[in-house]
Image (cartoon, rainbow, N blue to C red; front, top):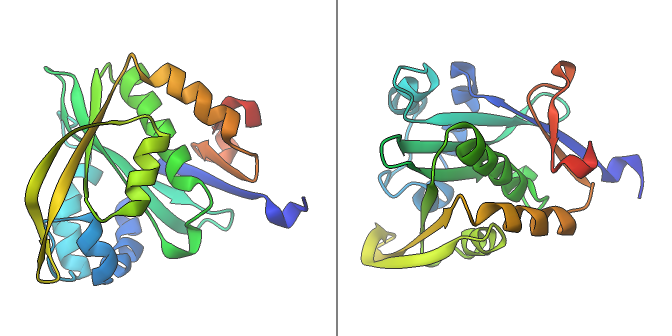
Length: 211
């Protein structure tokens, strides 16, 4: 395997400047309609800023944490986050979006692994939930790898392209994550490395076997 086959990325807190690129992604209706059921039409930068400003501005109490994923050139190629965090009940929702040019490299699995560590080991959450459109095969494969269990179906709860789709509800408990985490680490190769934090800060590589 040559050096060109290895790709390094870092995951850092999102900043307002990242919305310049994110807003361009959300002009793609095909991607947007499968990522966010509340956005039936493409949106511009102003709309994206309005909906994301509170999360990125870190208002207290923090009900969401979103991170940008940068490639080796410092260009943002994805976002991943925890949202709707409820500290009383110990739960939250996980979400990830990877730009087209960075897909099929394992970034979604690794970034979600980092977020699950953060949820269970730092934020003291007990469970993480996510929802996806029933025809979203990529997300179905992702959550299976991550060890999520299907917990329900909201029938015809997602309308897009003139059709109604079911919403699949999945979740994972903090007590279930450690074993799944080990299984994921064993299967991953070092072709794609994702550091949690900027490289100059001695960032942690996930999983640790690639450090």
